[in-house]
Image 1 (cartoon, rainbow, N blue to C red):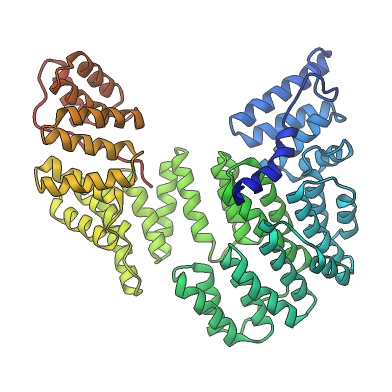
Image 2 (spheres, rainbow, N blue to C red; image 1 turned 180 degrees about the horizontal axis):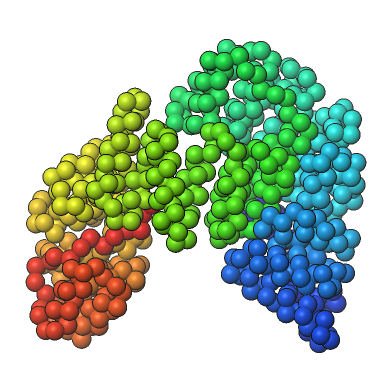
Length: 573
């Protein structure tokens, strides 16, 4: 079984079981109850509906309403606890979690959350009590042991915590995270030799090398081994030269005498939990990944890597409003700009384009980094403001070149699109070719340039080869298969064109251009009724003005002429 499957299997079962409601469960809200019970059941159903609609805040409110009326219901306690954790409602999560634990904690998560909450408030004995006697699965047991070790440290039993951590055995997927845990414990205990060795081992073992490097670098600086810290950062940056947080850590180490503060017990616990929580979030976009990241965030809400990861997990699982709130809580520092960029894009996807453009413009004006220029350029391009977008792509390219960085093919590609859309074909063609020189196997670039050559009647043989290569690289992208079908159409291979264009419509049924193309191909092979249907279909999909005029002409009886329709746009960011 793969790491991903093993990890998800080990932890998902209890949560899924907690989400089942059966008629035989005496603790479930009763459909046949009197007015108060009916109100409880209605709120329960509303909560389930809101959860299905990915409205975490409303789901939490509805379940909390039902739970208030039936505070002894195990099902409602579990549902209220889980929905409150997802939405970030700590107070409700605690009250419902306490009931859930008293009634058996079917999800096996409430006890962990309550322990993390107690640990965050330095109530270490309470944390140990919440962890005592839990019947947990392997993954939750590992998390519980990490938390209990840090609760022991807070309660004054460092020796007991280190002894347990050094003598325990864990499943293979958890070994790297146990190594980091041991390093953090030794660091907290001022055991320089043990901490040094464990941190170095964690760097080689951990899938999250940047986090391990950052923690080891802080350790070296606290131990007044500044030259070693700088050398550590340099080795990492040779492999990841654009990593913002390590670049900033290296600058501080080399240019100042600042020394990182020693971590508190909750802060160290957050970093110990980060690895396994991040591993789950990277492998499975499910609500469960959010729960563990909430645990980590509760221990230290100023630990930026965990907050960024939490926001991303919320976004990927469809909890967009909660994600926006999480992005806004990322503290100032090297993680803030990427978080702001992700938040701005999410706002735009949710329909608030004007606000996103205004915020991106403000960021671009106040930050000279290529990333800041690029987000504004991308939003301008997505909003059809191609001339201004091209100017910002140029600024981003100039900044990268001035910084001695390798040019990024995407800057040339997106600027080429802007030039093509504003009838500057010579500049567009040069940029497409520059993008391919940097990265020769980018399917989108191969497809766009090849298609433009096809509809312009230029370099037809080379264009056909480029589009075929793009289709081989990305066989499930409708707009690329459309290009291949249209290239066959232009060559007069109408039967082949129909085959590819039918496949393109299957992949992208809502694309007006692709339906338009298929209609023309049907016409050429004598399938006139089907051609008319596809043109009508394309017209119903709100095509651009040029295509609308062409479709109206087709439906009025004018047969297809030489290809003159637009590139079938990919949905790109």
